[in-house]
Image (cartoon, rainbow, N blue to C red; front, top):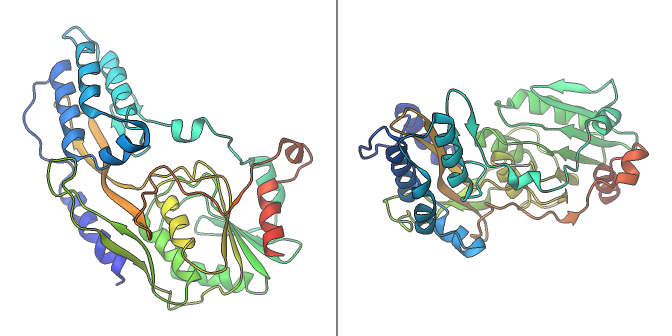
Length: 336
């Protein structure tokens, strides 16, 4: 078992054994639920210092600003709205509030940016004779470049599936992996795919764990490595296509791939999501998910707010009207 599995499986086991962080007792009132949520985030969230530097987040100021908005006469929906607004101050797509009637979320990490993806164009490039294997769609484009559409890492990819895909695309001069709108999933799947593109064990980043309730209570940085697959590996140029909705495990995949030779990232900055999420529960029974373990690139820099591409390009409106995907065509030119 590789080093990253050793790193993540104990935490995943912990998550399966305990669904929430043990918290102090708070009353099941609007004020009590506010106090519980604010303290859960204050004691366990992992990006306070980083976000203070990036945009001036002051969690104590947030407390003083939101506390007066709670009173005993609030409805559940009013309470949910104000709690969600407070969590939005973190600007974190991994922070969610779950109720029976809605899910609080922060989506501005991609909503304020161009989508840089058209389903109509994807269908045109894929045609009708593409192959499908475990969620991956792939084909050979007319200039002998392989194209793989990877919309999610929600499932294990399967070593046999990856072998068959790479065997099929082996005659191609290069490979495009279209990651656009991939919101993440399993880190192990992201690593499994990345392992097909390196011939040696490669340092790809670092990770820390929260060790106490203080904002700076973290373990030392632990190195993350990707080891080469023992099965078929790709040796030719690769272009990874990205947009702002590449998030979480998909963001990590881009981080891994940028460490390898012959890889070019084309498109828009990724959406980020560099904190491994954890969960807890409020007195009213609502669940809260939040980033608890920060991850960094190999230069020890956070990728919480995304990763810049090597070649920055947007989907052109003129190209869209002509039935051309600007980002795919830029990647083809990079390979050719």
